[in-house]
Length: 150
Image 1 (cartoon, one colour):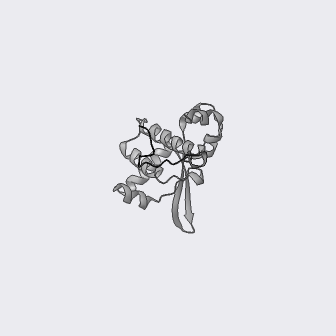
Image 2 (cartoon, helix red, strand yellow):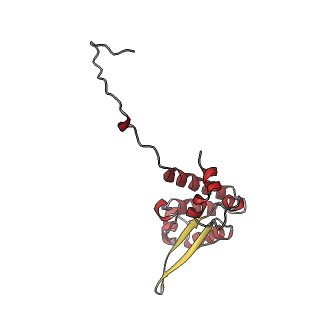
């Protein structure tokens, strides 16, 4: 198809300034990390299906600007999943025991506050990463970052 003077088509020049922005490496790396973490939990045959559901709910709260930390409360997770609070707590403890989460339990005076959760990639620790217990530590390790990038 060609555009002629009789054609009603208009030609819009494309210059390099109007190209769509590419995803930043941070966003791409975070999404790959999150997916790898979710797949790691799905592949863990020692965990019940309820733990996977809780992990997915926690991962929906991960904050890329806070090193992957998530802080949904038990009541929030209970409401999202439609399961009992004790079941949420039990599955969070299973994820922690299995090494998929690091949990910082928090209090506000005499009251409990929402816990903070950091996802952990077990494969990153096996590949030689030292003290790779947080998202930042894992993503700063060149071996882990190389494995996560396409």
